[in-house]
Length: 93
Length: 247
Image 1 (cartoon, each protein chain N blue to C red):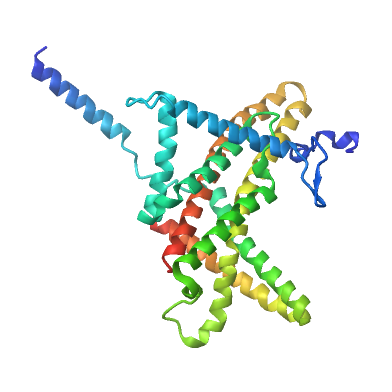
Image 2: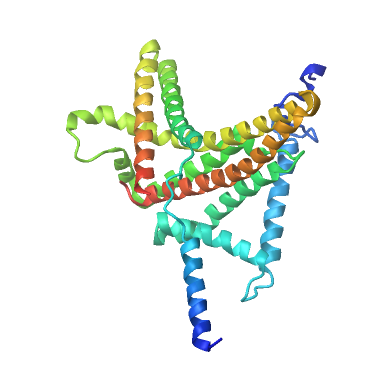
């Protein structure tokens, strides 16, 4: 075998190896369960904080049900905001 | 003590067993299996990193390559998310990542306690990140850090509604950070134990099927152990970034 042939052969082999090994743009980035888990923890965490603030406000200001009600709603809204931000971050990638 | 029926509960693995009864100022600071697991983790990290990087060869051995890969992984993560400011926080993020990662991996060893499956541990880690980044934000921006909660370009009458929502969203960070890691580890290890129970309980040779499933699940658990450490590190980077760039 001639030297040029050898080089060409090597070049071909490298090219095929490169095409095989280039990562395909995959769309299975998020498994369903992991994705759902991520979203649910965001909502739960915001609700926990909202309810916690509500209970503390009620305890020290004596506004019994209203602090809890208002901050529960705020917590839920904050949860949606968190989910929205996570979604936006995922879409950016 | 658990009665005989409960002895093989899938949750038994999460029990804290104190090896000593130490008390300091009214607080129980006993050395437990959780502490032992943490010490093993730190020892594994320290030994692995020092021994593999010690030869400092220009052409790295395989093990040295693993260490360098981990270093590059976090360095890249920091420079991608935080930018040039991120270099300072490399030791912090790297220690955190390695502690969670190797902690999860040590937990995958049979009979070994998984300390990341206790919410108090993950919450303490998340609280360090949260308090640290908040202090960092105030150090960088002073009182202007509060404008983090103020969204520009919104009608003024919306602010009484939006500011509490932003504050709650900010305060929920350590909780979501810690719950994610804790719940993933807890769920995974419980699932493994439940299926391990099926292996013994199922009649004849049918116990083989859950056994095969456990093997697959163990692989998945190792993936999750890595993924959760990665998520913990990347979120820490994002929070550090927020402390520098408000909005």
